[in-house]
Image (tube, rainbow, N blue to C red; front, side, top):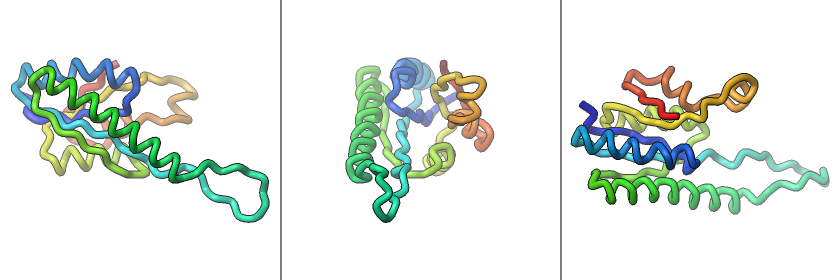
Length: 147
């Protein structure tokens, strides 16, 4: 049924918990997994002049985020290896993670997306948004949401 699953991961404890379920789903269906972690660009704008605003170093930020993304994907590929599930990992860069996830699923020929959701509600959902909601709204593939 699901021969190629795209599994977006952000390395959060929730994503780590979902990893075992994703591997079981792939194993049961004789499928494979592609783990993807999407890096967003440095979120701060440099201010000119002597504004007194301290701006974090973009290179340090991007380096830390790249290491975190590689670590998140590495944990998924290690879990896949232990479960005997074929898996590859991708780290992508995009200001819009949901668009990158949907595009990767299409480009890679995935037949399902499985992702964890934090289940935010109220103002947190409004202000933080939901990449899961955006993926659901912009893909025609089946999406399994784990909480």
